[in-house]
Amino acid sequence: MRFHFEKLDAYAKAIAMVVCIDSLASDLPPGRAYIRDQIRRSANSVVLNLAEGAGEFSPAEKARFYRIAKRSATETAAQLTVMEELGLVRDTKEGRELLHRVVSMLVKMIATAERSRLRPHHTGTGTGTGTGR
Image 1 (cartoon, rainbow, N blue to C red):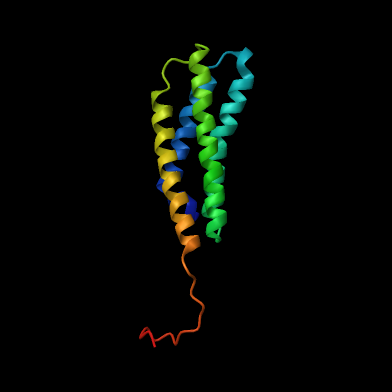
Image 2: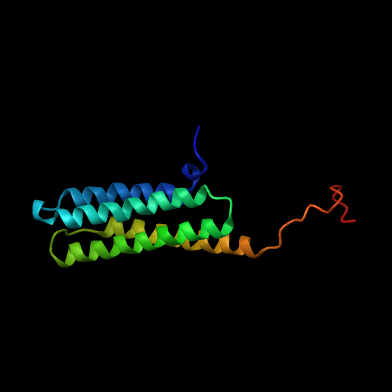
């Protein structure tokens, strides 16, 4: 049996991103443990907040967790830039592509949750016959 969030394309892409980032982080020299730890935490935060948001019933809470996941994804991208500029990694293309895809999906998920939050909710006063009377 799978949890709802495990069925989301964004979750699958985020997991692939974590695997890619972890591989890059593993190649960092011992003196750069602070970068290794930070990029792993930020990448993992994307996955965790995405899952937490998917588990929320409240559209406002869903959007909040998805926004946190998006911020963690951009933090991860910034860490990749730091790693590149310090000459610690050469090829971040796959990680960046996965991050772009995850951020794009999260932006859409945030917009959907926010639209859902603004829709009027059913009050339960209808007859339940579907006739609109």
